[in-house]
Image (cartoon, rainbow, N blue to C red; front, side):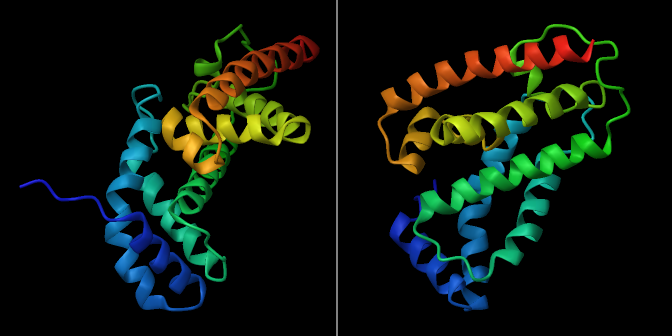
Length: 196
């Protein structure tokens, strides 16, 4: 028998109670959101090269460790929670790439697609770091488009889920996604051009 999804309002109530200091709320929340977080992490990690040393379960465990530090957050709702988790996944993957960055900037560089630029592996940490710099710049120019990229790639959210988090239409997410990808590719190409 398939389990029924937990209503969003129940998750929201637990998030708010946790934000107000109720540690038992976190204990009740964890099993409710674990499967969904694991699915997000699996989708994100499915884009990685084979042999990547960071696995979806390890990514989720690291997200949980960092979430514990968010005790006093005023959680708005389920969407807010998953947006924060997407941001944490981004930070974890970037930190992982930085810690494994053995390539010198510009060394062995080649033109890559945005999807390749988002792959985290021992072979391409410099490209992920280039993406991080470009995404940070995009956030200064257009925060919503940056959030779309963060939620879709780093958080593994679908177009519909991203629209829910950002409280915009799916069409807006698709337009932002298209523009942001082109902008990031151009910015990353420029950075590589200056590095050589």
